[in-house]
Length: 510
Image (tube, rainbow, N blue to C red; front, side, top):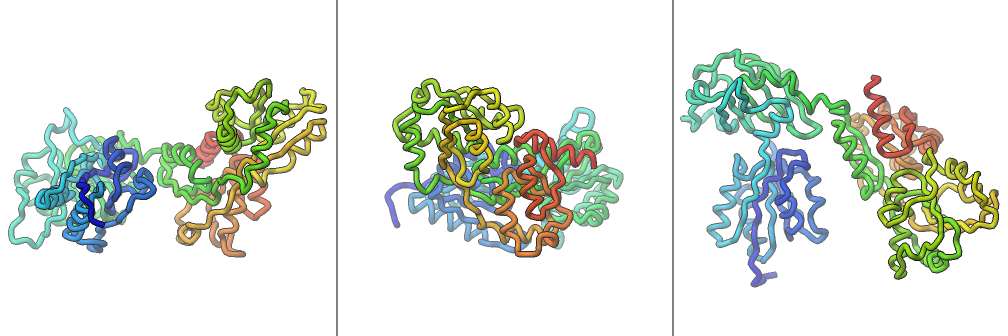
């Protein structure tokens, strides 16, 4: 639909692969965009910042397989901008360093379309840094050059001054040059560089898939071939490569190279993903559950209406707190409605969430499970006391049953429910069949049950094989064992950080 509104295009550098390296302004451009046009080297996880109604268009170019030609991309962003849309063109690395961003800018100028360039962290700098290679160092060199490695070796005349590179530059970085590595080596040696000059190649730099090899100009080609290193990769030539061995901070992380499945609900997975990623793991988010409101809010609303009649309010999860307060506020109330009601929680995360709403828990047991709450209440006189227990629809029965035995009058109210998610089941099974998974995390019994349901009947052993299973605590572990999983890791502290610690210790021992 044509509009008089003028569109605008942001040519945004998405960074080298690690989504954390997107600039603040780059992220803002994704957030405000009506249309996001992204390529092969832009991390797909950056798309989570886009508006729900944004149009997302993939135009990746990989190894000669082009979703859309460069001319087609140019025409696309012009078309969208002319319709009045704000377009964010998300390009891997930096748009003006071998990113063809200048060509896109020229087309926008020709069509009278307003644009801005948002620089990104280029892989020419980031990939070496993540491999422990500083491009400049006072003891080695003060000069660095960025060169395309994609130049056709069959060209009648090279556009690169090889002699100047070989004799006049301390550190040379080639982008997109793995295919042409033999020619690059030949040109450098023929123009005066010593075959003993240190060299390295870094593939998928800054990502958990990063792999690097180092050697000399004389043997780097053979080492790359032996290691199976392919594009996308960066080649670094110069004495600074000598520093790699002692500065290799990224690939030496304890969980580097481990591919870990996170089955937690997507809305809650960030803490676990963040902690495991910091340890070097590649996290694959395959949520098996989704947390949703109950089908009927009336029982919870009724309990909130009668809140002043309760003596205790017990929260067994972060979700319970969040959904309860959401309904409290929806009913026009706030924490003043609690009066003298005491609160109890399971776990520090639930306690922290409660405190966010202005309440400090009166009881938090040392162990984070229902049985520990029961033990904590054994010193309390619960005879005739009214307890409100807002929690998941399918929660374990032990807590209300035991509290009732102590003389309490327990109202167990559904504050939220979980449902199975099967959207990405085929992708998950494909990863398992390819033996591409090292570990699976389970943070609740429902994640276990729903994960098991995704596997075709009778194929658990076939699909899981040597995959390590990690459970957040004994209840989750028992559910997993009952369903046929071989559980290798059980967290001693039943928290996300406790689970990460247990996973870390498992691999350190090995």
